[in-house]
Length: 178
Image (cartoon, rainbow, N blue to C red):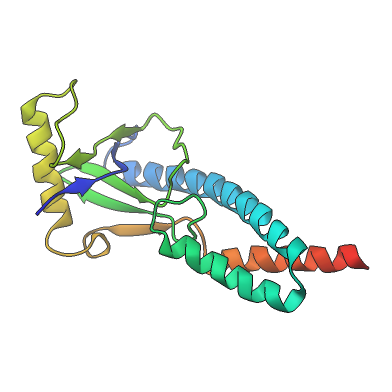
């Protein structure tokens, strides 16, 4: 089996124990709020273009297609409404794996890169012992199940958020026509 763990970090908070988890949660909320603003901006641009070229009845169908396409492209597209983080308390550390944040900067020095890929060479600035430790850590964290079965999920976009944005764009379009 090939192990590929992208967008993975150790959260190096200032507080230990439960305080570290509190700090991580606050950090994820900041990331969520930044991501939601950027996501909404991109969705407004996309839906505004679509609404300007279609009549109302076709707009709803096209919006549904655009939202589904964002979800079907996989987790790593900026307009993915299923963006999330998985948190794994492991061996006294807080590991975090992000999904759907392609092109989005975390902009937080407390997240220390902790990715692992066994089909590539280890980074030049790392020794074999640390690379093997990452492999063992992620193999244990991932276990035999899915990420969701082995960690805690933190969603960045609430359900139906993209649809709500699309309806706001449609409403603004109707108001402009009056």
